[in-house]
Amino acid sequence: MVTTSPLLLSLKLAIAVLVIACPCALGLATPTAILVGTSIGAEAGILIKGGDVLERSQYLDTVVFDKTGTLTIGQPEVRECISLTGITSDRLLQIAASIESGSNHPLAIAIITAAESQGLTLLETTDFNTILGQGMSGKVQGETVCLGNYSWLTSQGIVIEPHYEVTAQSLAQSGKTVVYLALSGELQGLIAIADSLRPDAVQTIKQLQDSGLDTVLLTGDRSEVAQAIAKEVQITQVFSEVKPEDKAQIIKSLQQENKTVAMVGDGINDAPALAQADVGISLQGSTDVAIATADIVLMQNQLQDVIKSIELSRATVDKIKQNLFWALAYNALAIPIAAGILLPKFGLVLSPVWAAVAMASSSLIVVTNSLLLNSQVAKA
Ligand code: ADP
Ligand code: MG
Image (cartoon, rainbow, N blue to C red; front, top):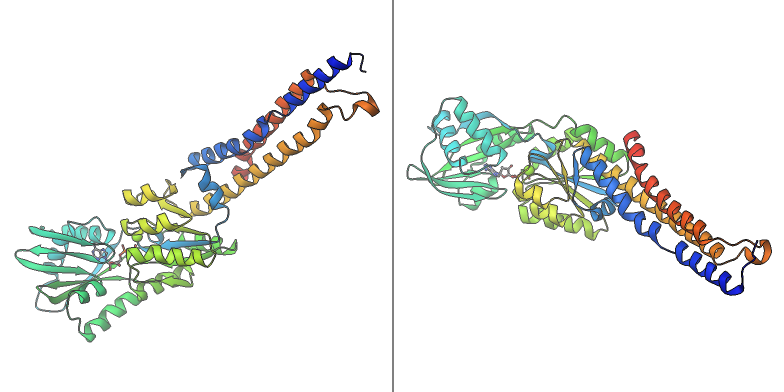
């Protein structure tokens, strides 16, 4: 019942309106949900570098995977060392390992490990030169060594006879990466290296496809190897023999087709593509540059967490929307009541004290709703 003077009444109404209209809940709606979302991620080993990443991740419709070190575990092993001239395969491996001592590429590590396990000592090497996504060059005992993929060696004027290519192709068709080695401009041998698929690669790709996302393979390796791996994981869209700078270009062209693209990669050569993608994702154990460039880092080193990241971002953004709805609904309802909409008909006014209670409850509702994300994502 209203018994106060008009001045007091209008003052009461004004204070109640001011208290109710304090936009606390609106202000809390987004940051609390993002805080809870990113901390759920952190607990699960998914490091998300900022709330905007969560917001962008909800729109993803395409996930692009690098091959070596991303779809594969990145611990390749030398399977065959084929000499094409008089050189012994031990000598071939020894020279290759010496040159690779200047690289930290997974293939380099495979070659060095193989040489060490055969008891071969590394030879003194000078003039190291890394050609990202292609190979290496340098000088071993005064001889120029060129080592890497087909396009790198041929670009150096090294002739690869067609019958050697037949051997290389059959190795590649079985999913092995072929590293060519030339000494003083002449091809000497091939090293076939194989890496195992990550145990969760097939399942991850399938789940992404089942939930309507496009999956793409993007690799610097030759097409036969790319196709062999793509077949195993059931990816149909494949880009192979892609140079590092062109990886970013391919991401850009997908974006120009109105796709929202995530790139999952591990190497230095993936960094431009990780930066170009709407969301760049790296796994723990990737190169420092890839980790620094990525928006999301999967610390558990599991591809499955790509799916978890997308789910988490969608759940977080849903929460933000719910919070904004509640905050707006509260204002839309409470402000007219505070302003005295119920006064003429029902003689009811909202006292400033109750306005304060309502205002605090709206903030509490928003914060509690954000915290509920914990149980919802845990269940999912
Ligand atoms: P991916 O894109 O699959 O991660 P990379 O771009 O790292 O592969 O490498 C592409 C190709 O370049 C390799 O398949 C290999 O043939 C060649 N290559 C790159 N770095 C080296 C290296 N250090 N030693 C030998 N070959 C290399
Ligand atoms: Mg890689």
